[in-house]
Length: 139
Image 1 (cartoon, rainbow, N blue to C red):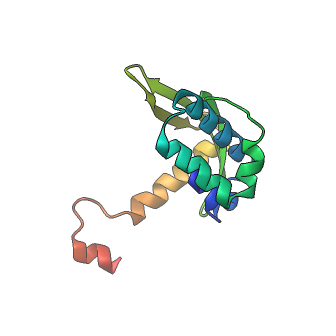
Image 2: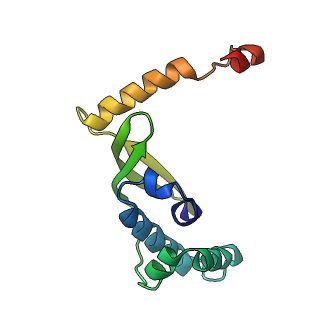
């Protein structure tokens, strides 16, 4: 996620509140760094991001620490526009390094309507398990 946020040129288009997303990403990365300070992959990631992203260096210098628990994320979807979803992070009791993120749209919200539209679009555009390879290529 950190590479996407800081190194992918399309990330600022994907997240309408990119600065908030970037702050949260860094704070969560610091949270993990505190738990795994000797992890060579984590050290390498921080080095890579520091080398290639001025935004990362600026936020990393803030020393903010926060684990993911719950909140709201806003996405800019290319077909349906802005989508605001609530999320909750659930850590596995027997493996605290495994986190499952559950996203939902409040009942009756614009996001719920947008997700319904998106589901309808994908229903008609995604191949099914019964679609042959030649049918998939033709579509």
